[in-house]
Length: 356
Ligand SMILES: [Zn+2]
Image (cartoon, rainbow, N blue to C red; front, side, top):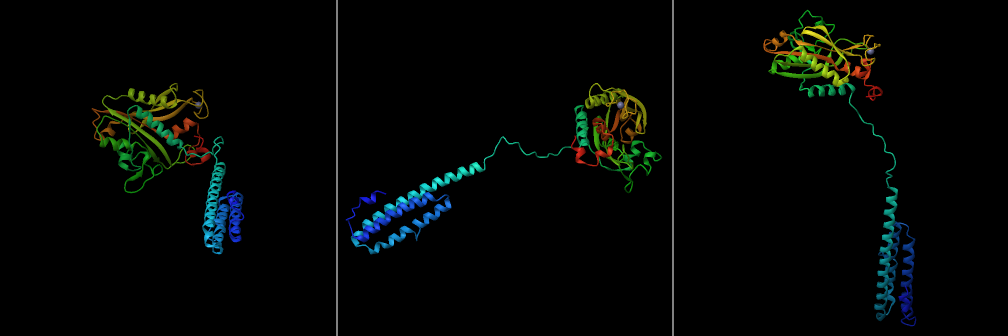
């Protein structure tokens, strides 16, 4: 800024002196204009006003024509020096504004890590599915294998092969959903025994879970529900093995202190047959509404596989013997959580399901 005043006022023509003065004024004005520019857009506008093709310096350059030939180099040198200064001022201001912009943005976009997060609702497994996985895991730990079989089953697999003959009440139209050509919606998972035992050689230890269907619907019955079938076939298998396995299962599921008892029963596909009860988990055996004041809850049906069933699958009952059991996963789930209406399990009301 002071360099210009080094020029002696007496030097050169009035036109040269005037031009040199205006060049200095342009530098001073540019410095002010850049300083006033509050953001990058305003600075760009100011830059064009001074350095652009039609800017103030370009206009001054056009006035060189009025100068004497020997004055032009001096004016040109002065104009270039001031122009370089203006370019430097512009770059300096640009850097300041860019830094300020970054800081402003960092502040605006800052994340307060101390704020509590927004809760994301999570899904969960249906209570019956939770029970199924838990029950399968218990039997897997005892060496059982998990297999599946079809939900639409032949009458032979679902009934005849299991020693449920044509006059048995289970085969009544009232109880079974018949499809067509000798097929039914399976009424129990016991058909899995037939499927597996006709395909595989003993020894076998299998559990199989899945949906079963019956024409039945009230607070404790649903037309579709979940069962688990389990069986073990080997040499010299006795009721002792059956009791040991099932007691271990109940203790794994409900705790080691839960009492159990076996009662004689009847099923066409087992001989002898039994039902397993456990001490009521709601009243610890003293009697309540859930256990009908008996102190006991029915958990499952079981027994030694009937020799006829083994023979139907091509297994020699003189060599092999086995036990089988079937249980309702719905019932196990209801007992586990104290649910008294089976429909709650199938209505898929989230207010109910989210409690598990
Ligand atoms: Zn009870």
